[in-house]
Image (cartoon, rainbow, N blue to C red; front, side, top):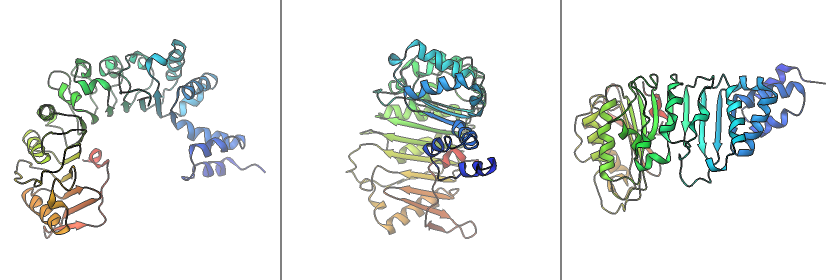
Length: 368
């Protein structure tokens, strides 16, 4: 006896099912195939060239499936490995994805660095109107026309090879009216630095940028560039990796305060490779430049750098000292091997430790 479509739909929407499970259900019966295909094609993940080709051929035979696709993630091989026929197939498939809202073009793991492809024209002239775009494959400057055709983008995740070298190619090169709805940006500091002499997002609310093998000069240039977006920015997240020196995170926070005094959320994650052998004090002389800061998240290199974070009593004393200086702070989080969260009690103004902590790695994108 065949299951009615309603039962098939309930079974297919069970949260424990994987994409492989849905593929198996699609072979059970027509009713299961209809519902399983609908769910599978809502979010398509293509991780290899052979998967890309299969997907393109499927849409050529059954173009109606593309109308179900809202999220598309394509892991692209190196540009040199693509034939002209491969690009033609991909362009034709993208042309029928009119409902697409979230597009992710990612580099292949075989590529030594991200973002050296220059065939960005394959994304131009399609009917979809994106709200989210992620790129680790193309160089920034080759996507100018694509961005001009996608004014509805609100979320942009942009990490490319060129950004690590701070060349002219890291500049997005858009006119002032480019990406008018962009609210959230994840990128590298070199893209941020390009705001000093080119386009910058006029209404950006949330920013995360990476510092990779950065010098003190590069870190300062990134902070200076924040002045362009200071009037609208509400949250800022910074991750530093593979850096032997660099600015102390306490100094970094004070420099940020001088540029964006009305910031509500600040997160600094230091995953660099500094020695960590020189003891220091976390925020030894915190200023009062932050006027609206509500949440401060600090992830220091290690607890050896800041001995006061090793023991519970000194950790609590450090949190109270900082929160008493930053009088607008509602939450202060220290992340080492675990998360320690301190909150200000609204009525009594007492500072207490939250257990368990309520930390969300993506909360910087949700600040109102």
